[in-house]
Length: 174
Image (cartoon, rainbow, N blue to C red):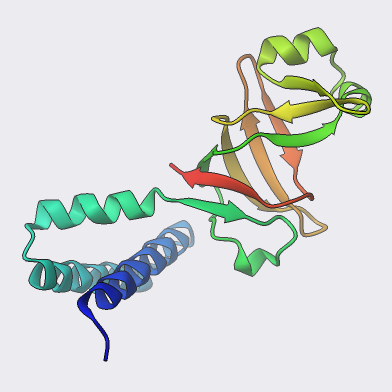
């Protein structure tokens, strides 16, 4: 037998899926599917109001907190499995060891001092590494031609258009 918490969890997951699909349909000017998503999302809100006894405002706030959730983003997964849409904004919830310092300075045509001033951390392990710090805001741009995710990484003085191919990292959708 299914309990009320499982039903609420399923409704919230369905709402999140519809919210993502609605965003995709809006980008493609697909008004019929946008309206279908909005209709189903309204039905889910009504169901949650009935199940919980909360007001529409309280249910909306609860759903908003679930939409801005923290999850693990895996750059090595297939693009269809990524839980992000083009131009979604995320905040890093952990440091990312991005690249060794020498390579980063050559590729980005910069210096160690400029990277530090821009907000990157330089960590010395066996060699020096450029670390993108927790709290950095990034804009998702989808997969590149090789299928790796690309992000516009916003730092203090400029943005960096970077491709990620390493380990999974935690982000918060904002």
